[in-house]
Image 1 (cartoon, one colour):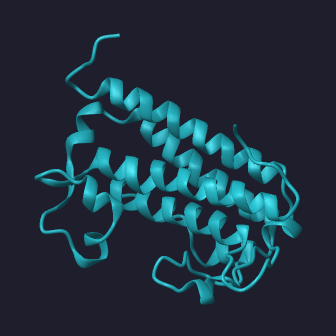
Image 2 (cartoon, one colour):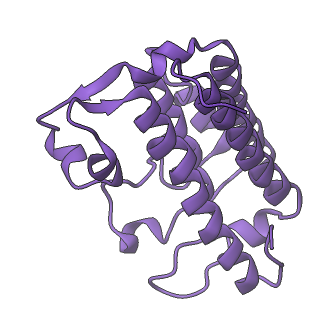
Length: 193
């Protein structure tokens, strides 16, 4: 297939990759229980609950920045899911976040499906020309200056494509790798070969 200049090839690939990554999270949730995700290995080792909530909540927040839609996570979700720490932990230490636990595993799954489904539906209707829109121009703010997306950013700054790739897709794969490794600590296997 020949490359296109309007971004449709990149968008088609991103849609497929996002669905594939989300399917890994669905498979992980279906093959674990609260005893696995809330397992405390030892000080300095984050529980699977951290990776699950951190990534899902960060996708919720990142999607809001990219799309302009409101974040889904609110007091009602927190009352249902009952996270031990009502924070994705991006600005917190490992010593703090080692205490993260999911209170209601089924409700967490509902939240994750809501976040992932919304992202996929939005991508399905996205105009490929939107991928080139600059979300964060240079100079990047301090909260982004030392991130992977800052290294990816072009001369104009962080585009919608950069944000989708870095903040949602690559970030999700990074945390899926952590989950796959941590599954071994609780007697489960990895998700992919």
